[in-house]
Length: 368
Image (cartoon, rainbow, N blue to C red; front, top):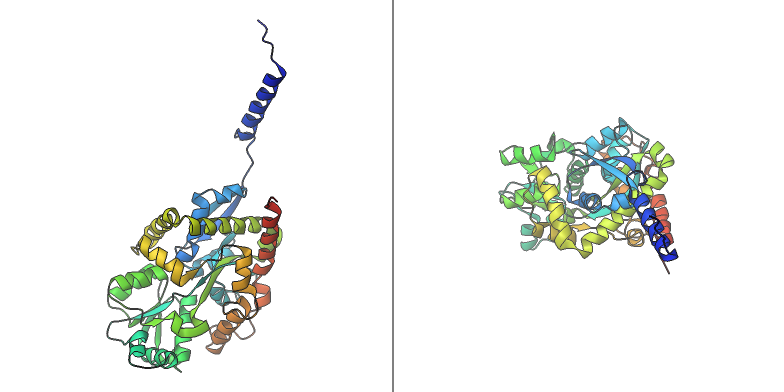
């Protein structure tokens, strides 16, 4: 029996076949695999959203997360060639660049103002000194002076150690006036502090919140330390990967902005996803309310390349990357943590180049 198809039927049939071919696994777009190093900090929560909500896949990427505990582990894995790209604080990268001058900061995504050095309850806090009538400058100095002769737990070779040095500078102390003990990971460090080791402790925000819940105040808040108390975070890659996979990095950063935009617009969905990931990996017991407060008070996420420009690249901005990192680098050189002249900031940070390409790509996708 012959079946006669009309022209309309033929068009519909061809459309259906085309759709089936395009959506068939045989004809599906092959995704580009990316080995992505990730650490469990609130700063990096949007990367989880990008994965869970399919934003990486929309950019043609198969991102495979490799979970690591710290900036140090990310830097070591990158230097060993085990990662293509990974989260990294540019502040922490100052420590690693002298040993690995191929390290490149390819993206700056957040501004963190929630650092704190936590002391045991017997120490007077910055806010208590303010209540005594001291100025902010005097209160910061007096609070930090309490560290003299004391034991401080932190991760050596990380931004957290740099926060300690910023506090020592304000108190006119040096690292010779204190004992700084290295912690294997933030989780192990906070456990050691709770068990009675050390007088002061500083690490990530999940650990600060854990200590707050246990009755330990933010003795020296980052806000008391000026420029030295704020931190940038973003992504690092190798020079080779940056040069050979620029388009891939652009697509990764585009997925970031999609995730940040989603987080701002749908926080009732996004924040529980981020909190679950953080608690599973840190045991910090962060609540959704904690996370909401963090992203409105302590953490700033620019939602577009234009907004990022005003925060990280515009001259005169408090968080402009070059002046901010220059201050941190000078401090690290002064205390001998980084050899003088060993870090070339303009070579290390290429995030501005990527940001311009991301903006261009996003503008090209707009429909007028």
